[in-house]
Amino acid sequence: MSKAGLYIKMFATHATLSKHPRATVTDLRQKYNPDLQRKSLENRQGRQQDFDNFVTKLKEYSKSDRPIWEAAAQDEARTKANSAEEQKRLAAEIQKRREEIKRQAINGQ
Picture 1: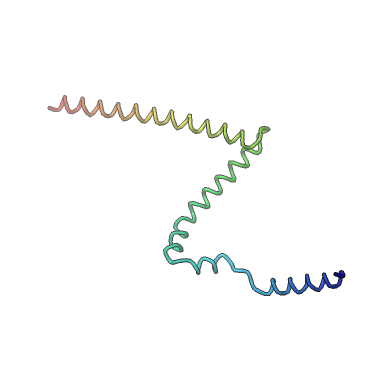
Picture 2 (picture 1 turned 90 degrees about the horizontal axis):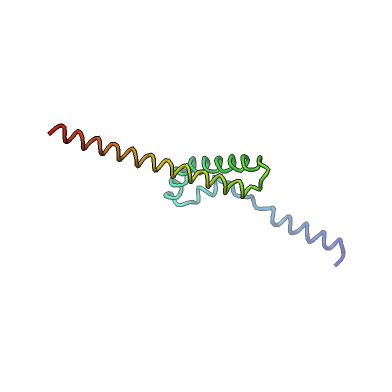
């Protein structure tokens, strides 16, 4: 096929495919089931916040001299250790409250 034929075919394909307008996000949402629309709007703020947190952490990880996956794994381990310490602290606090309630019940009778 000659180059002119190729260009004509490309032009015709482009004209055919670009003829239809692309759907916008609002058009797609209007085609949703009303329940899905409601759920999507309710969860939208949370998803945006999660994405912002994810991007912020990626930027933080990229500042270190280690690969991102290693920095993420180290941060995750640190977070797990902190949450374990927090759970231990909460368990001790609950135990202290229980003992205090028992003492008050014994002294009050």
